[in-house]
Length: 264
Image 1: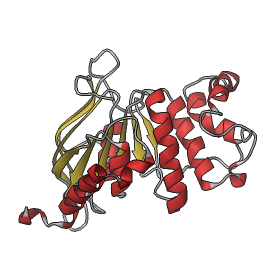
Image 2: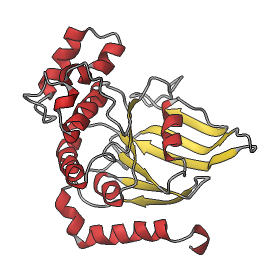
Image 3: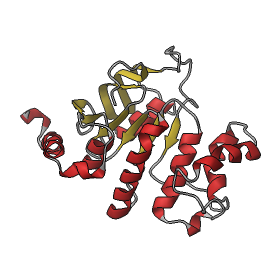
Image 4: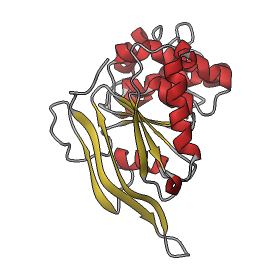
């Protein structure tokens, strides 16, 4: 699976973000540049406070950079006039509405786009089995496991039909075993979806297993310290984490994470 010749979906150039504070200002991002191309799964990893979630907010149009340029591109390769409302955003918490069933939570994004509930259900129902939700459509969130709730949230994100999915630590709240199961499930699903994603995570193995490339940020203010292509073959499987190639990639990424920037 290669995306080397694919068109860009998101491009950030020299992005800086500062917040006004009583102390004068908080410098969160400093000159960040990154690119996500069609069909890629790209991950951002870095210390807490390095601006990872801020980058997702900027990509989504929720925030604007103080300096630098950000562009989203449509299916025809032309830059979009605006970013807000043009991406699908999945936060760490599933944010399922407790009074809506699994199916109706999955269709919420479509309904917010003025699709009727009946039409939204027609689109979602054929995907329930693919997302491991067959037999759970009428269950309320309180009756679903953490992994099932995340599958509903992911289906909601996919159904939004946007060119780029932003995933902010989507499996971070799950226990280790459930998270491993979610990785295996997503790997089995990803190529068939034909989607593009930018994900934030603290999990090194997750970043390497799911991604085409990994952007490593420094501590605040966040800068791109290293871009690591992940040359593992596709389709990926969880068993790859035990291969010498994966172990070496993990060692390389951990080296950058653990070594002070000035020491490299």
